[in-house]
Image (cartoon, rainbow, N blue to C red; front, side, top):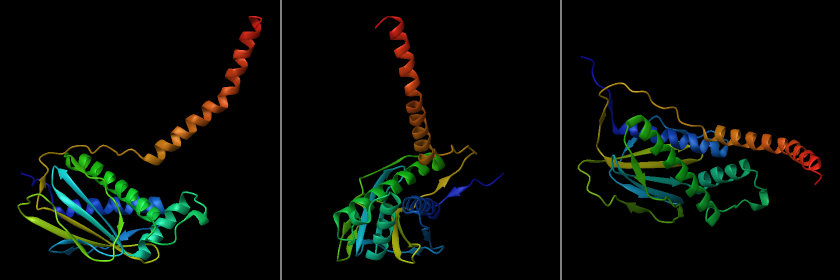
Length: 226
């Protein structure tokens, strides 16, 4: 009998790391990479200079913490704003700016959304999360999950930006395994960029067709003597 495939905590962590690299690389236009080595830690903490935490619940319970240095946060933020076509004079130059916290918080929200989508399609289970919010801090703050976990596990992964600035992701969750009983097809995730491009093309086609429609209407009204 073939052995059933088991999805472990490390596999779930790998999925989360892929969401981080995919979302931030796409947003900033630069390459974000993570270490092949993962650290086992005893607790999760928010550390200076700017961090965020997200609680999730459902198919499994856990906590995600991201800790950015001022340099890594500003590199990602500024590259994202330039990628969006924002004028240089409107881009913040301090990690203490509210705009930096808001933008990084929205990027974290996109990361968690991508992760929950992957969990739904790959593990056939569902998780929900609170709204993440980035905040600048100057002291270490310990974060714990306000739920009972039978066998909590914590992991820490190092990420590197294109300019070799460092940030960290910490995951705490109950020790769990997903066992694949039989094969199933994983639905291909929709590409948001492709959807937006298609909508823009359709809108452009409608606008280009509008004058012909107006001319037809004018001819019809003229035939009626109006």
